[in-house]
Image 1 (cartoon, one colour):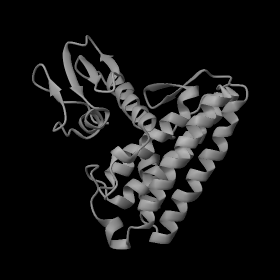
Image 2: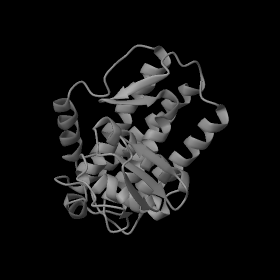
Image 3: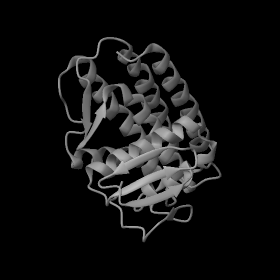
Image 4: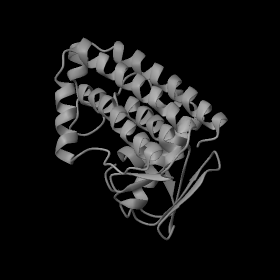
Length: 232
């Protein structure tokens, strides 16, 4: 089981980040939801749909953790894409309702992590995730994709620990996807090593996340040329 104090802290931060996300989404008109997001090829409605679909998918990871019965986060890449497309095509009010309900459902189901955990780790695609980090994974999705909506909200408004969750989630993915060797260092004194750690890259958490997740290198410094990164 997760330490109850840690679970409560993670859930409290998730509630905070989700409330800010929902406020942003509620502020968007039908036309604004149809506009492009910062996630290449996706509209804002696609982002909202992904966040709704992801919440339900992560409940399957909670099921795996507490029952020990392995299952995929999505049945297939095609099923994931179809689910996102279906939700994104809903009218504005129904789209928002899907996100509200899916977010509530994950928050409710994550309470099960306070009990016995039969699988210490699960996999989201090829990425191994400690079962105790599933709420943090949802936080990272909310923070990164809230920023992808490209509104007045910025990641600086996220809780510092939520921002840390987001960077850690992207770093895990970079390791699995064989990103070039790097040592990542933040002004907040975080440090992560990927591969052989050959290239030193420095920034604050916000700048590092912008580069790792979306390729925006404006806020990072390195002791050599920045490499091309795998898509996240």
